[in-house]
View (cartoon, rainbow, N blue to C red):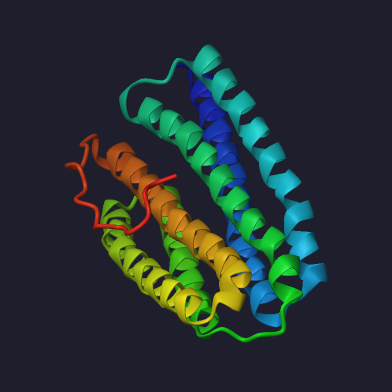
Length: 231
């Protein structure tokens, strides 16, 4: 490639990474704020999370356009092509992560109408923190092409799964012993499942990063025996 073409390609890749970094930062903030809204029963903050999701969707569309442009005009090869394709796949996953955070925020007004305090609520913030950190590290791994950090993210997925199974068992027991709490427990189960899916999606991002960085695919993961089926 001519020098000016290489420079243009590098600038487009930098822009691509910048957009993904912004999108990832917004998704991380959405997770954190959704969990804060749940803890504080803050309906206003929950509404802000829902509204802000539109910007995540807009960035995804912008990245898709840029990726098509890069492939059409630059015809990247080998490592460069893997990076571009990984970026396209990653933004789709990050958009879903934003949706899960939005789903959690939408439950806040429903849970906030009930003044009972349930023990499982104490587990959810820690579960959300682990999932949020996985998203953060997976995106950092992409930015740095860090295969080792990607592997570390993948290994942490079992922590989120263990949290989910613990919350599930606790809530089921609580519903059996206190039938009047069934409605609130159902909302909390929905929240826990969305956090668990955030962890799964962060793991998916990490797997894509590993492939982009090494050109090798990881063996099929042996998932823990989740009580609930996958979405």
